[in-house]
Image 1 (cartoon, rainbow over the protein chains, first blue to last red):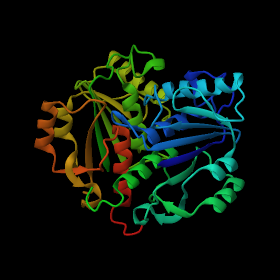
Image 2: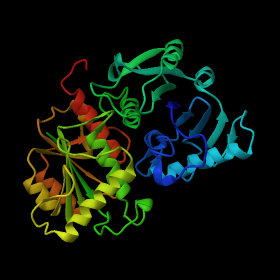
Image 3: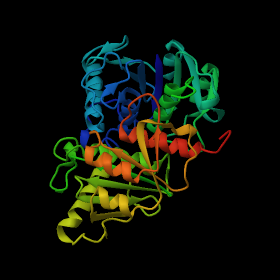
Length: 196
Length: 196
């Protein structure tokens, strides 16, 4: 299983936002929508071996699993609607334990430290001083941690330092989180194939 | 210069669509918006060495250049608004010659055959039977041709066959066009670096 953790520093936790303004009133939720697309969608297919954890303001975590998710389309607006529905769920239900919103989409009151503690697999930090991803022997159950449009905070970096088993880099350019996910997937897809 | 040509088979050519429904009333214009993002945007930056040509229904071509473009944001809706503005331009101006819409965004009455004839650089076809992109010595001015959510038509494939100098593949998975652009950029970014 491939797992991605995305830190949404400013993402709305209140479902009262308009889908017409994901970058504004929803606190750059557009960034997270694009990450969901990159993590889970293929051309005419879904990556069933992948799971993404969106951590909103270090307070709530929305988990989406490729093997269960339904109603997921590639455009930002429809993904934004699914995330909004998950946020509505927590308004009417206790989410100290994880609760399902729509099929394959779960929400829970949980911050970054707890997600890192509980997630199975080997945590890899994407870092410009890391080893080129193509040179790395990737683990079976990699967990990649990315930040949204903002850099990791010092506290988040310290947590990562404690949990990450390895640092990898993707290339000389600084990519958006969703672009980085796409490159990571491609690296894992082609890993171990001398000619893929 | 890196160039991308994207075939938008169903994309709206009439600007009378709502930004609230890019996948529907705008004929999957969301696909092209994501391609613009992948082609031109970096985290906190623009790929100034890149140009994208969006061919709408084989009738109009919107060209966006990284070194000139302004007002470009990563979310689909704001990119959709820029494309809509370009389509409005052709309603009030003769576009048999290329005309500027907003800075760095041009529109012209031009189909795929003419774009292929006139574009500078070496045309590379992305094809599942091609050579792995990491094994290819990439040319200085590559032109990558991709299709939207639909496959190339037979006529388009025949045109490509005539113009493409090489076929390359990106990996074992079938990616969305915007994801493919991201992988291609990464391949070019890291090409020639033994350790990038």
